[in-house]
Length: 138
Picture 1 (cartoon, helix red, strand yellow):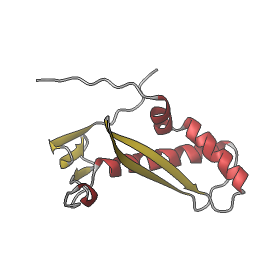
Picture 2 (cartoon, rainbow, N blue to C red):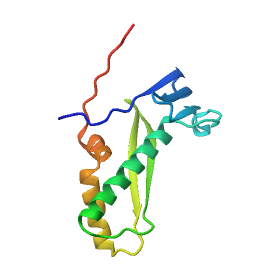
Picture 3 (cartoon, rainbow, N blue to C red):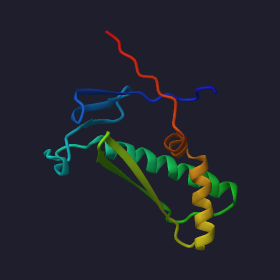
Picture 4 (cartoon, one colour):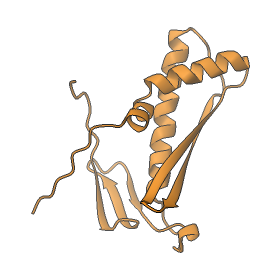
C-alpha cells in the first residue's frame, strides 16, 4: 500500500478543552466540551471534526460512484451524525450517514449509497478497522 497523502493535526491543551490545528495551518479550532457533557459548548469538539471529515469523504465517494455509473447528482447532500456512547467499558462512537439524492429513484439511490459506502475510505476504516500506531516521544 503506497501513501499518496498525509494530513497531520496537533492537539494542545487538555484535548476537549484545548486547541487543534493542522500542520499547514489551514484549520485551527478551539475545542470545548459540549453543553450536553457539562461543558460550555463554546468551541468545536472531536465529534464535529470527524462528522465533517466523514461527510466530505462519503460525498466524494458518492460523486465518484455516480460519475462511474453516469448518474448526474443534482443538489446532493450528505449528512453524517456521530454519536458518543457511554458503556461499562468506556466511551465509543457510532455513525449514521444519510445521503439526500433528489431526483433519483429510491432503488438507484440506495444502490449508489451502498457502492459509495463500500469504496469510501472513512467507511472502510470504521467498518473494517484501520491500522493505527500509537507511540510516545520525549
